[in-house]
View 1: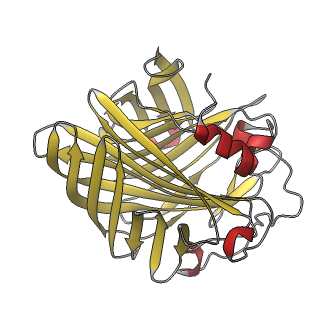
View 2: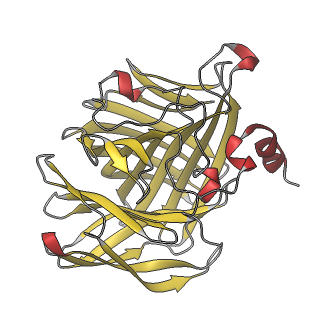
Length: 344
Protein backbone atom coordinates (compact mmCIF):
# COMPACT_ATOMS: atom_id res chain seq x y z
CA UNK A 1 0.00 0.00 0.00
CA UNK A 2 1.29 3.49 -0.82
CA UNK A 3 2.36 5.50 2.23
CA UNK A 4 0.05 8.38 1.30
CA UNK A 5 -2.92 5.99 1.04
CA UNK A 6 -2.12 4.60 4.49
CA UNK A 7 -1.97 8.09 5.95
CA UNK A 8 -5.25 8.93 4.31
CA UNK A 9 -6.98 5.90 5.78
CA UNK A 10 -5.69 6.89 9.22
CA UNK A 11 -6.46 10.60 9.03
CA UNK A 12 -8.87 11.58 6.29
CA UNK A 13 -12.55 11.33 7.29
CA UNK A 14 -13.86 11.00 3.74
CA UNK A 15 -12.12 7.63 3.45
CA UNK A 16 -14.52 5.96 5.88
CA UNK A 17 -17.65 6.35 3.79
CA UNK A 18 -18.75 5.49 0.28
CA UNK A 19 -21.82 7.73 0.39
CA UNK A 20 -21.53 10.08 -2.58
CA UNK A 21 -18.21 10.87 -4.21
CA UNK A 22 -15.39 10.72 -1.58
CA UNK A 23 -17.99 10.39 1.17
CA UNK A 24 -19.39 13.88 0.56
CA UNK A 25 -22.92 12.51 0.84
CA UNK A 26 -22.39 11.27 4.40
CA UNK A 27 -24.86 12.62 6.98
CA UNK A 28 -23.55 15.76 8.69
CA UNK A 29 -24.46 14.82 12.28
CA UNK A 30 -22.77 17.15 14.78
CA UNK A 31 -21.51 19.59 12.14
CA UNK A 32 -22.91 22.96 11.11
CA UNK A 33 -24.90 22.99 7.86
CA UNK A 34 -25.47 25.85 5.41
CA UNK A 35 -28.70 27.79 5.82
CA UNK A 36 -30.46 29.89 3.22
CA UNK A 37 -30.49 33.60 3.96
CA UNK A 38 -27.21 33.72 5.90
CA UNK A 39 -25.17 36.70 4.72
CA UNK A 40 -21.54 36.11 3.85
CA UNK A 41 -19.07 38.53 5.44
CA UNK A 42 -15.65 39.54 4.16
CA UNK A 43 -12.84 39.30 4.92
CA UNK A 44 -13.98 36.86 7.66
CA UNK A 45 -15.35 34.29 5.19
CA UNK A 46 -12.03 34.11 3.34
CA UNK A 47 -10.87 32.21 6.44
CA UNK A 48 -11.62 28.71 7.73
CA UNK A 49 -14.97 27.50 9.10
CA UNK A 50 -13.96 24.64 11.44
CA UNK A 51 -17.54 23.83 12.52
CA UNK A 52 -18.24 22.66 8.96
CA UNK A 53 -16.85 19.32 7.81
CA UNK A 54 -15.36 20.17 4.41
CA UNK A 55 -13.94 23.32 2.83
CA UNK A 56 -11.63 24.35 0.01
CA UNK A 57 -9.64 27.26 -1.42
CA UNK A 58 -9.34 26.46 -5.12
CA UNK A 59 -7.44 28.34 -7.83
CA UNK A 60 -7.19 27.53 -11.53
CA UNK A 61 -5.42 29.62 -14.18
CA UNK A 62 -5.25 29.62 -17.97
CA UNK A 63 -1.93 31.00 -19.17
CA UNK A 64 -0.13 32.20 -22.32
CA UNK A 65 3.55 31.32 -22.37
CA UNK A 66 6.26 33.56 -23.78
CA UNK A 67 7.17 30.49 -25.86
CA UNK A 68 3.81 30.71 -27.67
CA UNK A 69 2.25 27.71 -25.90
CA UNK A 70 -0.84 27.48 -23.72
CA UNK A 71 -0.60 26.33 -20.09
CA UNK A 72 -2.88 25.72 -17.14
CA UNK A 73 -2.24 25.43 -13.43
CA UNK A 74 -4.15 24.44 -10.31
CA UNK A 75 -3.59 25.19 -6.61
CA UNK A 76 -5.98 23.79 -4.00
CA UNK A 77 -6.07 23.62 -0.21
CA UNK A 78 -8.69 21.31 1.32
CA UNK A 79 -9.74 21.27 4.97
CA UNK A 80 -11.71 18.36 6.40
CA UNK A 81 -12.76 17.79 10.01
CA UNK A 82 -12.93 14.66 12.13
CA UNK A 83 -15.24 16.61 14.45
CA UNK A 84 -16.36 20.26 14.69
CA UNK A 85 -14.10 22.94 16.15
CA UNK A 86 -10.39 23.57 16.44
CA UNK A 87 -7.71 22.77 19.04
CA UNK A 88 -4.04 23.55 19.20
CA UNK A 89 -1.41 20.87 18.69
CA UNK A 90 -1.87 17.27 17.62
CA UNK A 91 -5.34 17.16 19.20
CA UNK A 92 -6.67 19.29 16.34
CA UNK A 93 -9.51 17.52 14.51
CA UNK A 94 -8.71 19.42 11.30
CA UNK A 95 -6.98 17.64 8.40
CA UNK A 96 -5.41 19.55 5.49
CA UNK A 97 -4.62 18.38 1.97
CA UNK A 98 -2.98 20.40 -0.83
CA UNK A 99 -2.99 19.72 -4.57
CA UNK A 100 -0.89 21.52 -7.18
CA UNK A 101 -0.63 20.85 -10.90
CA UNK A 102 0.60 22.22 -14.21
CA UNK A 103 -0.82 21.18 -17.58
CA UNK A 104 0.86 21.76 -20.94
CA UNK A 105 -0.37 20.80 -24.45
CA UNK A 106 1.45 17.45 -24.10
CA UNK A 107 2.00 16.77 -20.38
CA UNK A 108 0.44 16.99 -16.94
CA UNK A 109 2.33 17.27 -13.63
CA UNK A 110 0.69 17.02 -10.22
CA UNK A 111 1.62 16.59 -6.58
CA UNK A 112 -0.05 16.38 -3.17
CA UNK A 113 0.60 17.37 0.46
CA UNK A 114 -1.10 16.11 3.64
CA UNK A 115 -1.02 17.72 7.09
CA UNK A 116 -2.71 17.55 10.49
CA UNK A 117 -4.05 20.88 11.76
CA UNK A 118 -3.02 22.65 14.95
CA UNK A 119 0.75 22.43 14.44
CA UNK A 120 1.29 25.33 12.02
CA UNK A 121 2.12 23.19 9.00
CA UNK A 122 -1.07 24.21 7.19
CA UNK A 123 -3.92 26.63 7.71
CA UNK A 124 -5.75 29.76 6.61
CA UNK A 125 -5.82 33.27 8.05
CA UNK A 126 -8.66 35.57 6.99
CA UNK A 127 -7.10 39.04 7.36
CA UNK A 128 -4.60 39.51 5.95
CA UNK A 129 -5.53 36.53 3.84
CA UNK A 130 -3.03 33.67 3.79
CA UNK A 131 -3.60 29.99 2.92
CA UNK A 132 -0.66 27.59 3.16
CA UNK A 133 0.56 24.04 3.46
CA UNK A 134 4.31 23.63 3.97
CA UNK A 135 5.98 26.16 1.63
CA UNK A 136 3.00 26.39 -0.73
CA UNK A 137 1.10 29.63 -0.22
CA UNK A 138 -1.68 31.80 -1.63
CA UNK A 139 -1.83 35.21 0.03
CA UNK A 140 -2.90 38.82 -0.39
CA UNK A 141 -6.22 40.58 -0.94
CA UNK A 142 -8.87 38.77 -3.06
CA UNK A 143 -10.05 42.24 -4.10
CA UNK A 144 -6.52 43.51 -4.75
CA UNK A 145 -3.05 42.05 -5.19
CA UNK A 146 -2.24 38.39 -4.45
CA UNK A 147 0.69 35.96 -4.78
CA UNK A 148 0.78 32.20 -5.35
CA UNK A 149 3.60 29.66 -5.01
CA UNK A 150 3.86 25.87 -5.21
CA UNK A 151 6.40 23.24 -6.17
CA UNK A 152 6.43 19.56 -7.06
CA UNK A 153 8.97 17.05 -8.35
CA UNK A 154 8.53 18.31 -11.95
CA UNK A 155 7.54 21.96 -11.58
CA UNK A 156 7.68 25.20 -9.62
CA UNK A 157 5.39 28.15 -10.16
CA UNK A 158 5.26 31.70 -8.85
CA UNK A 159 2.44 34.04 -9.82
CA UNK A 160 1.53 37.64 -9.08
CA UNK A 161 -2.22 38.29 -9.37
CA UNK A 162 -4.39 41.39 -9.46
CA UNK A 163 -8.17 41.44 -9.04
CA UNK A 164 -9.99 43.29 -11.83
CA UNK A 165 -13.53 42.68 -10.65
CA UNK A 166 -15.70 41.87 -7.61
CA UNK A 167 -16.35 38.68 -5.68
CA UNK A 168 -19.26 36.66 -7.09
CA UNK A 169 -21.81 34.88 -4.87
CA UNK A 170 -23.32 31.75 -6.40
CA UNK A 171 -26.86 30.47 -5.97
CA UNK A 172 -29.00 32.49 -3.58
CA UNK A 173 -26.47 35.10 -2.33
CA UNK A 174 -23.86 32.40 -1.74
CA UNK A 175 -26.20 29.54 -0.76
CA UNK A 176 -25.63 26.97 -3.53
CA UNK A 177 -28.04 24.01 -3.76
CA UNK A 178 -26.49 20.75 -4.98
CA UNK A 179 -29.37 18.25 -5.22
CA UNK A 180 -33.12 17.80 -5.50
CA UNK A 181 -33.05 16.75 -1.83
CA UNK A 182 -31.67 20.15 -0.87
CA UNK A 183 -28.02 19.50 0.05
CA UNK A 184 -26.12 22.76 -0.23
CA UNK A 185 -22.89 24.65 0.33
CA UNK A 186 -21.78 28.22 0.80
CA UNK A 187 -20.04 29.13 -2.44
CA UNK A 188 -18.41 32.25 -3.85
CA UNK A 189 -15.67 33.02 -6.39
CA UNK A 190 -13.12 35.59 -7.44
CA UNK A 191 -13.14 35.00 -11.23
CA UNK A 192 -11.48 38.29 -12.26
CA UNK A 193 -7.77 37.77 -11.54
CA UNK A 194 -5.12 38.89 -14.04
CA UNK A 195 -1.85 37.01 -13.53
CA UNK A 196 1.81 37.05 -14.52
CA UNK A 197 4.71 34.95 -13.38
CA UNK A 198 6.99 32.02 -14.14
CA UNK A 199 6.60 28.29 -14.57
CA UNK A 200 9.72 26.16 -14.05
CA UNK A 201 9.23 22.91 -15.97
CA UNK A 202 11.52 20.02 -16.93
CA UNK A 203 12.33 21.78 -20.22
CA UNK A 204 13.17 25.05 -18.44
CA UNK A 205 11.50 28.25 -17.17
CA UNK A 206 8.80 30.06 -19.12
CA UNK A 207 7.24 33.45 -18.42
CA UNK A 208 3.44 33.40 -18.43
CA UNK A 209 0.48 35.79 -18.34
CA UNK A 210 -3.23 35.05 -18.23
CA UNK A 211 -6.26 34.88 -15.97
CA UNK A 212 -7.09 33.00 -12.77
CA UNK A 213 -10.25 32.02 -10.92
CA UNK A 214 -10.56 31.30 -7.18
CA UNK A 215 -13.45 29.19 -5.87
CA UNK A 216 -14.36 29.14 -2.16
CA UNK A 217 -16.80 26.58 -0.84
CA UNK A 218 -17.68 25.02 2.51
CA UNK A 219 -20.35 22.62 3.75
CA UNK A 220 -20.85 19.49 5.83
CA UNK A 221 -22.86 17.37 3.39
CA UNK A 222 -22.65 19.01 -0.05
CA UNK A 223 -23.91 15.94 -1.96
CA UNK A 224 -26.78 13.50 -1.66
CA UNK A 225 -25.81 9.91 -0.92
CA UNK A 226 -26.48 8.74 -4.51
CA UNK A 227 -24.40 11.40 -6.30
CA UNK A 228 -21.29 9.71 -7.67
CA UNK A 229 -19.41 12.74 -9.00
CA UNK A 230 -19.56 15.98 -10.92
CA UNK A 231 -18.54 17.77 -14.11
CA UNK A 232 -17.65 21.41 -13.35
CA UNK A 233 -16.81 24.18 -15.84
CA UNK A 234 -15.34 27.65 -15.21
CA UNK A 235 -15.17 29.57 -18.49
CA UNK A 236 -13.85 33.01 -19.41
CA UNK A 237 -15.38 34.10 -22.72
CA UNK A 238 -13.81 36.53 -25.16
CA UNK A 239 -16.37 39.25 -24.35
CA UNK A 240 -15.20 39.08 -20.69
CA UNK A 241 -18.30 37.19 -19.56
CA UNK A 242 -17.64 34.39 -17.07
CA UNK A 243 -19.64 31.16 -16.75
CA UNK A 244 -19.66 28.70 -13.86
CA UNK A 245 -21.64 25.52 -14.57
CA UNK A 246 -21.79 22.08 -13.06
CA UNK A 247 -23.62 18.78 -13.41
CA UNK A 248 -23.86 16.43 -10.43
CA UNK A 249 -24.36 12.84 -11.55
CA UNK A 250 -26.72 10.60 -9.60
CA UNK A 251 -29.98 8.72 -9.90
CA UNK A 252 -31.23 12.05 -11.25
CA UNK A 253 -28.70 14.52 -12.62
CA UNK A 254 -28.71 18.00 -11.09
CA UNK A 255 -27.32 21.11 -12.79
CA UNK A 256 -26.60 24.61 -11.56
CA UNK A 257 -24.43 27.57 -12.46
CA UNK A 258 -23.93 31.30 -12.67
CA UNK A 259 -23.79 33.66 -15.65
CA UNK A 260 -21.35 36.43 -14.70
CA UNK A 261 -21.47 39.68 -16.68
CA UNK A 262 -18.22 41.61 -17.34
CA UNK A 263 -19.07 44.00 -14.47
CA UNK A 264 -19.52 41.06 -12.06
CA UNK A 265 -23.33 40.99 -12.06
CA UNK A 266 -24.29 37.38 -11.32
CA UNK A 267 -27.40 35.62 -12.62
CA UNK A 268 -28.12 32.14 -11.18
CA UNK A 269 -28.79 29.29 -13.61
CA UNK A 270 -31.37 26.95 -12.11
CA UNK A 271 -31.48 23.18 -12.37
CA UNK A 272 -32.21 22.29 -16.01
CA UNK A 273 -30.97 25.59 -17.49
CA UNK A 274 -27.63 24.00 -18.47
CA UNK A 275 -27.21 21.13 -20.93
CA UNK A 276 -23.98 19.13 -20.90
CA UNK A 277 -23.37 16.40 -23.47
CA UNK A 278 -20.12 14.38 -23.71
CA UNK A 279 -18.80 14.39 -27.30
CA UNK A 280 -15.48 12.53 -27.13
CA UNK A 281 -13.94 10.32 -24.45
CA UNK A 282 -10.32 9.38 -23.85
CA UNK A 283 -8.36 7.29 -21.38
CA UNK A 284 -4.89 8.83 -20.99
CA UNK A 285 -3.12 8.49 -17.62
CA UNK A 286 -6.37 7.33 -15.99
CA UNK A 287 -9.88 5.99 -16.65
CA UNK A 288 -11.93 7.01 -19.66
CA UNK A 289 -13.42 10.49 -19.25
CA UNK A 290 -15.19 12.96 -21.56
CA UNK A 291 -12.50 15.33 -22.89
CA UNK A 292 -14.82 17.17 -25.31
CA UNK A 293 -18.24 18.48 -24.34
CA UNK A 294 -21.21 20.19 -25.96
CA UNK A 295 -22.33 22.83 -23.43
CA UNK A 296 -25.57 24.77 -23.93
CA UNK A 297 -27.29 27.52 -21.96
CA UNK A 298 -30.24 28.35 -24.25
CA UNK A 299 -31.46 31.30 -22.16
CA UNK A 300 -28.12 33.03 -22.82
CA UNK A 301 -27.56 31.91 -26.41
CA UNK A 302 -24.53 29.83 -25.40
CA UNK A 303 -23.90 26.81 -27.62
CA UNK A 304 -20.25 25.80 -27.45
CA UNK A 305 -17.76 22.99 -27.75
CA UNK A 306 -15.46 22.65 -24.72
CA UNK A 307 -12.22 20.76 -25.48
CA UNK A 308 -9.35 19.72 -23.23
CA UNK A 309 -5.92 21.24 -23.90
CA UNK A 310 -4.42 17.88 -22.89
CA UNK A 311 -6.58 14.77 -22.52
CA UNK A 312 -4.29 13.22 -19.91
CA UNK A 313 -4.79 15.81 -17.16
CA UNK A 314 -5.55 13.13 -14.57
CA UNK A 315 -4.77 14.04 -10.95
CA UNK A 316 -2.95 11.02 -9.49
CA UNK A 317 -3.84 12.00 -5.93
CA UNK A 318 -5.40 10.23 -2.97
CA UNK A 319 -8.86 10.90 -4.40
CA UNK A 320 -8.13 10.79 -8.15
CA UNK A 321 -9.96 13.10 -10.55
CA UNK A 322 -9.48 14.86 -13.90
CA UNK A 323 -8.69 18.59 -13.90
CA UNK A 324 -7.29 20.64 -16.76
CA UNK A 325 -7.53 23.69 -19.01
CA UNK A 326 -10.01 23.80 -21.89
CA UNK A 327 -10.73 25.86 -24.99
CA UNK A 328 -14.19 27.11 -25.97
CA UNK A 329 -15.47 27.39 -29.57
CA UNK A 330 -18.88 27.84 -31.15
CA UNK A 331 -21.36 30.61 -30.41
CA UNK A 332 -18.72 32.06 -28.07
CA UNK A 333 -14.94 31.66 -27.88
CA UNK A 334 -12.83 31.51 -24.76
CA UNK A 335 -10.83 29.40 -22.33
CA UNK A 336 -11.35 27.90 -18.92
CA UNK A 337 -11.06 24.88 -16.68
CA UNK A 338 -12.89 21.57 -16.41
CA UNK A 339 -13.01 19.27 -13.37
CA UNK A 340 -14.49 15.76 -13.51
CA UNK A 341 -14.79 13.48 -10.47
CA UNK A 342 -16.16 10.01 -9.82
CA UNK A 343 -15.05 8.35 -13.06
CA UNK A 344 -13.60 4.83 -12.86
